Figure 1 (tube, rainbow, N blue to C red):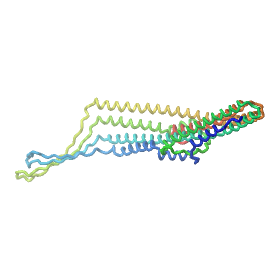
Figure 2 (figure 1 turned 60 degrees about the horizontal axis):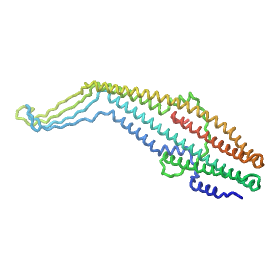
Figure 3 (figure 1 turned 135 degrees about the vertical axis):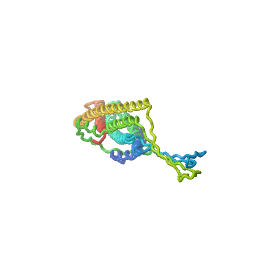
Figure 4 (figure 1 turned 30 degrees about the horizontal axis):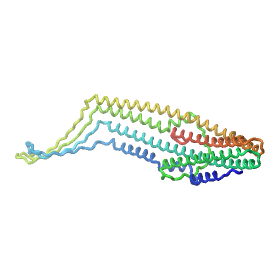
Length: 417
């Protein structure tokens, strides 16, 4: 009796109908370019940087001048006539050096946000690469699983013929169909995973919901030629985290110096003009208007407040220095950790390519031939097929892990490698 196949046919049709994706190929470079242009997080970081850059242009400016007007309800009589109205204008001038330090501190803050903007771009590039390599592995896993499914279908047909010829038990046919069901289940999960990755891509690329992502191009492992010492030098020069923490120290130093200048007074210069009404004297200056220049200073006598401000800025400066030290340690660790991972994955890829995959293919071909000639049982063939499937998937997983580690290292050092 022949075992029916319609269940498998229905399942395969459901997979194809429910999880089809665009056949148009998509490249990593195009995805990165689209993300850099459209990602809202990058745009937000850019706006934050520009806002502080614009602020740096005006914080050095003087405060607005003050204009005043006074009207005498009851005229004050003077020797030359009654005072009627008074006009005044004044300008506050901070102590020399305060505005310059305030501008320098604000400029450093703008530079910090510029580095954070660059870091946001590097982070999105890393996420896009991670996403692309994950989709690439899923596409490869789908392709390999479909190929393995075709192999199992052929194996099931061989087992069916041998069962019909009373050369093998019906159990072999059932085992083949069970294995086929497992592969179909795996295909469901892989295609579901791809849909989830497509949703993540739409978020990173700021695309409409439900937009499909085309198939990925083949990924060839890039040649990694850097030594550890060279990577440390690169990170010292270009890591956005390190550059931002260094700038934060400089900003804190300017703010501490500015707090110390608060012990010194600010000045206010002004002039008042008073209108004088006609008097009753015969003096030649009878009814002449008058003016008066004036200067005032604030008196910084609340030393408790001023001392606390200086101590606050000193503590913040110390915090910035420690944060920079911690950032250096983190970056150094990540560089070394990723370097060793990359070199290990490089060796693993070579091992799979030159030894493990060819050996698994040879073992599978030998088991298939032996089963068809009756030299080995069905389980030996099935085990060889499973090993081949796992080895091929592991090979591509090693490639993906290698490329993702390089992408992560590029994020840490702050530039393309």
